[in-house]
Amino acid sequence: MRKKSTTRSTTDSLGTEKLGKLLLQYSVPAIVATAAASLYNIIDRIFIGQGVGPMAISGLALTFPLMNITAAFGAMVGVGASAMVSIRLGQNDRKGATLILGNAVMLNIILGIAVALITFVFLDPILYALGASKDTLPYAKEFMQVILMGNVFTHLYLGLNNIMRASGYPGKAMVTTLITVGINLALAPLFIFIFHWGIRGAALATVIAQAIGTVWSVLHFAKTGSFVHFLPGYMKLKKEIIKDIISIGMSSFLMLLSASVVISILNLSLGKYGGDYAIGAFGIINSIGNLTVMVVIGFNQGMQPIVGYNYGARQIPRVLRTFKLTIFAGTCVTILGFLLAEIFPKQIASAFTSDVDLIKLAVNGMRINMMMFPIIGFQVVASSFFQSIGKAKVSIYLSLTRQVVFLIPALLILPHFLGLNGVWLGGPVADLTSSLLTLFVLKWQLKKLHL
Image (cartoon, rainbow, N blue to C red; front, side):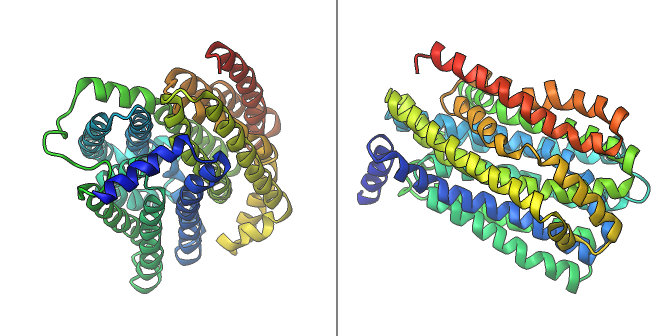
């Protein structure tokens, strides 16, 4: 009984505690978790580049859009469910939060299996459509075959971790991710360098680690001492709950889906204007840029339960103050990422490979592609803010503008005039234009919502 009371006071603190302290309390575990996961991806690519070869980095880069698509379904359920759980707890509706948990689990299992089976059947044509060549296809195919076999674990792990954080356990959500990353980092070099399983070994390490992370998360929600936990009769799918989960989580889904389309177009352009090595260079650049963005997403994940709870409790001044603090923090992070990319690009690229041509391509691409990174933090936080208060349509709109409205046209037009540099320049152009649009929409919506 004492545990339940303690957890109840923890969720109540979202409406009473100082906001700076709260944001750090909820963001730091999320940042540690997201940054650790992103660092794993970087280290994994270093293992693959040094242990398998530069062409394997290109093959791995080709899997980014496909992995984004498969993960998009899990992210949709996890983000949508966690936002709803936060709002229900703010409304003191514990039964509603428990129903959301049960529906999220069942939905993740169904989608995880279905997406894996469909993708596995059409894997070869998908990879060719994404820009694979006869040299890179074997690496991409070997990696994805293993990843798809563990896809249901990916969905459950992402979904339950989000709900764990939203239901008052940010520290435990962080520990779950750290355990998963730690296992991954221990197994990957063992499988690649000792067992010589190549790129399949890297994928197998990921699957095993996420399976263990899923078991850890399930054990948490199986305990009656957890404030929101599994209950008999609460796992049956409910049409209205599924509709709400998908509606709120659709922003994350469409953002990942559009990112997949963009990366596919990017890979095709890179292959056309720079060859397989240019695709590998993007793999390096994307790893570093992703690390920066994932830290911002960590702040977003910390913001989400605070904003969701206070919006549900109609404490609007706390909602706005949390939003402003998160924008400031996210902008500081992206400025730091920009400085590292502009000052130390050669050192960063050299960690992944010793191939001189690949390093040269990565250095040039990194400096151009990340030149507008200081303003990305604002755009990412603003989009997540509307998701946190249940305004799914606005969040979807802001998420899609950069990827679809601005970036795709830039990638189709600029390379005709600037060649490979035009491909690298597409990102900065989209960052600038989408951030300006986000600022306009933000002012309009805040006034409309009387916030």
